[in-house]
Each structure stands twice: as C-alpha cells, then as structure tokens.
Image (cartoon, rainbow, N blue to C red; front, top):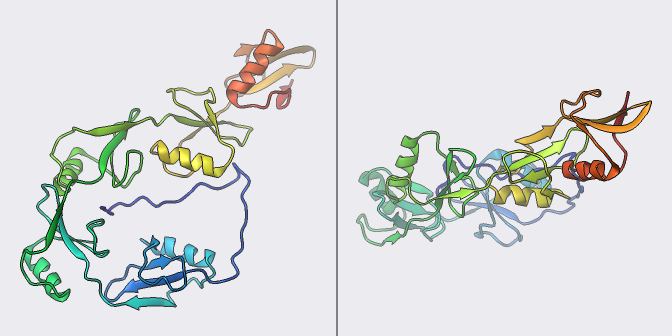
Length: 298
C-alpha cells in the first residue's frame, strides 16, 4: 500500500550467468495516465487503456521499459483518461484519510494532512464535502527483520520484501502509528538472510544459511533462481553482499601433495589433503569442479 522509499525492483544480471538477448520489433501494449495526474501506467495490450499492469515510479523505470517494448524513449503516445473517482479510506487505528486512484483501498495515492485538503479533493472529484463513504480497512502489510541484523523493514505483502527501511525507532513508531498498528515491537517477522558467496576464480554464486561460509548449501544455475532466492530471503535482487573466498589450491613441482591456502597465497599450508577423497570433498564444499583444475604450481 504505502509507496514512500520504494525499493526499485531491479533484477540481477551480468557475467555470473549466461544472458539471453531479445529484440523487440513492434510496439507492445499502451501507455496511459489520468487527467491531472502525472503517474504513467502500462497495459500489455494495445487497447488496454485503464488497466494497470505496470505503474512507473520514476523516469529510470519508464524509459527502459518503453525501449524494451518497441516505443521511443520519450513522453509521446501516452493516452489521457478522465479523472478517476477513486475511493476514500482509513486504515485500522490510523487517524488519516487516504485516497486510492484505483477505486479500491489498495494503495495510498494521497494522504490528507488536514480537513481543508480533504474537502477540496472531494469537491474536485464529485463527492460531497463531508465524511461519508469512507471505507475502514484492517491494518495491512507487515514488519520484519533479518535474524542477523537489527534493521526493521515494512512490507506491503510478505516478510522479505523491502518497501520501507527504518533508520531509527522514531521513524518506525511513526510509521506504525500512521498505518494503524500499535506503537510497539510486537509481530515483527524474522527472515534468514544467510550468506551469498563465491570462489574468487569461479563465476558461480552459492548460499549458506550459517553465519560463516562455505559450504555451498545452494548453488544457483541461472539468474531466475538467484533472484527468486534473494527475494525470499529479504535481499535486493542485485550482486551486493556476495562474499568472496580468496583462498586457492596449490602444489609444489617436486611433490604431488595438494594444499589449500586460506589467504590466497601459494605456499601457505592452511589445509593439506591426505588423499584424493578429502581433496574432492573440499572442492565440492567450496563449489569448485571435482577435478584438478585451478591448482597453482610453485
């Protein structure tokens, strides 16, 4: 519902996985907005004006979307619809009245700070200047945090989705008050953040639920798996907070024994493998291929 401090819904791409290129040859869907309102929407069909398949919160989201769907990167060809009637509503014990452009109490497009602004808006939208027709809905959304960190977030949908991050208790309590929640620390869900990590010389990204890494409890085969996993664990869908294991395997020219150097320097004997089985088990734990590649000889 609440859109302040919205986290951009970007997805991770890059050299960690093969990326498929697509080319759009025709204009797809249509762009539209309401009269007197700047927000632009996109509908997936050419005649879908009025349907909100996607809502754009910034030019940085809007222009790439147009380019990807065959439209010029400008503000042309945006249909303008008559002003919406919308609906007025309150949330739980919150003292404010909100207005939703969709006609349903599903998003807070306008929050009225005083009765004067509220009456002016009602008159402009053809509603009597009184307190009639206001819908009261239960509190929506949830508060959550990672087991491993103190920061509390608010999600409009479910734990793990970051819609608002609170910098201090004052911001947190103010948000709860304005959204109809009691001003306390109750009902804060917890999500396992875990650790995302990779070996320095390999592209694959792994995840481990423990507060250390490795082993590789999960290895991601493509961007879709990786992004979905990050979403479910309350992490942004990008390449941040990926720990790098610096160590390397090495051996001497005159000795077949293989060592693991935790500091990444050939010659450091952090681990000496007594046999091939122990060596292969260690490589599997670190996400390395089960062979004798990537061994530095000194």
